[in-house]
Length: 293
Image (cartoon, rainbow, N blue to C red):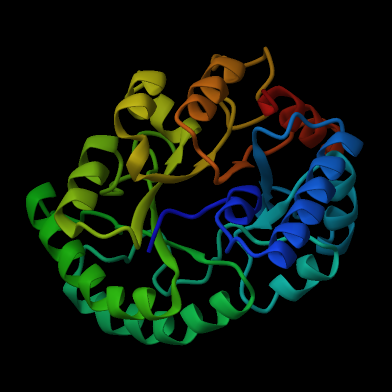
């Protein structure tokens, strides 16, 4: 599978008949008009993680998000996705893998349950046009990093035939093990990249979480420039605290976002900060504004 394309990029690669070209041009104009109506530049596909807004219903977040210029609300279960589709949005990252963050692909005993779930979830996600599904390494629990990679490779290669058949991508998230997810194994970009290289398939990529990687290793722009071919998705969050991404925290998001755009990235960037201000939607709006370079 080729890396996930944006709707705009996909349109440009469609067959060159006059009828198809006319449809593509019409849809492209509509997408540009949507960006302009929301005051967006069109360089970034914006998303948000629903779990950060527990007191906002999914319906309300869809309405507010579309007004802000979001194209996606993510980390949803398959059952929740029809709600966002009803509002003309998508789910850029599907959630629900058994074992969650702590019991993942680095343990052979977890593979059967993950494969069983994935074999059912992949065709459903594909039918919903949501081709990215999140997964996790799991915690080390005494497992060394080399063996962790070997075990993950074994598990991922069992999943690849399903991913290839349904044209979906399995995306493992990079998380920090210092503050939020103690003992998590995929906690450095070099470990994640080594795993991608060992798997060697376009159906397996990484979710580069800017918040988590700032805590673990910093040097984000250089890392993005060097390894962007392995990064299928990005998340945001303020450091420290995982709150708003404005000047109250240490990451200068406009520079990071410009580096992402410069790589030619056409996937999604999702806001994954926990707003601490009373007006949660205003904080989300601000975060999208900051990242819209």
